[in-house]
Image 1: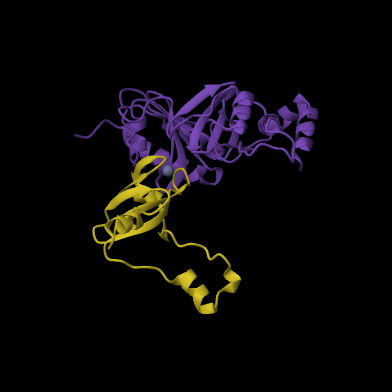
Image 2: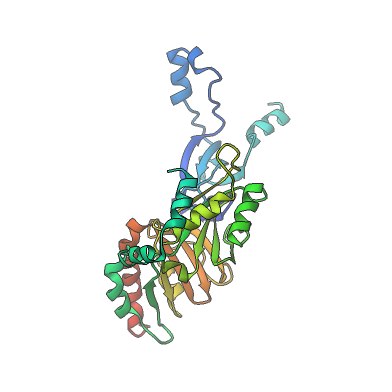
Length: 97
Length: 227
Ligand SMILES: [Zn+2]
């Protein structure tokens, strides 16, 4: 059983949470301007990295609030819980990779 | 129905009508009352269970620190609790923290005598102002949403620990604290009112299941401990 630290409620069993998929997938500014292929890319295409991944989670068994997390998909370890910009993006800019 | 309309209506309902209506209510776990009564045990491993039905419950949505929160706090007579796990009391209510902008005001035991929920909701909601200029917040009558079970006695915590993963030890969960969590997969509020007294609030449709789960979890404490 994983312990996930809700930013509002503190550490709780993973069974109190639901997964919301990849974080930072922006809603298209003008969905009507997209082709079917572009729309399907927005709806269905997600990253599947081996390693650190920015994700959405919701504490549905508690405060019912959404939050973001960086999780290592290899070890399942939660590296950080955050709001706003992805620390991965911030890190990438800083490292000029 | 418009809020203002229900407020006017609530004022015009007589005490007799309210008391007749109260006599017709049937609590979600009414059929378990006898089983609860005989399942209780005394002594150093004692644990007792009862339902406290029909408590007035107001669901509150307001962001702490805003004018809406201040208006609700003034109407309730109690501040909104600031952080997860905390509760406040005042004005005949205990206010439980549900989320950063969500709270549940639970009436004292006397609030169950009459069906006060609609009138109290209208009274507190009225402080948010009229439609058009209403402060951003909400007050809804949730009195029939959850029932209240009270588990008490030296073994009460041991019973709950079979189904609640949150650390209920006094070092992390003190009297006067309440949390939103899961008991045997069922979403509940767990509220520690005294050192050996816990309230469990499941939604009405889960009351029978949770009541029977608690009865089952209590059974071992009616016999001497096996070493
Ligand atoms: Zn939470």
